[in-house]
Length: 71
Image (cartoon, rainbow, N blue to C red; front, side):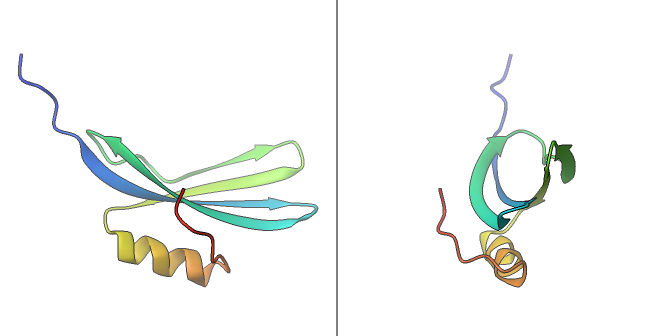
């Protein structure tokens, strides 16, 4: 069996809560690009958007009002 090829995707997680909004950028390595998603977690709304290019993810995070460093 051949090893699975992993690709790097860039995730922008935007969390809206009663105390404000946070934007976090992370990388994910997986075989297939994850689908963008959202969930309602009690008093928080959490949105995850995935991108194939780092620059586009950074631009999206900036447009969302985030200036958080990569984690």
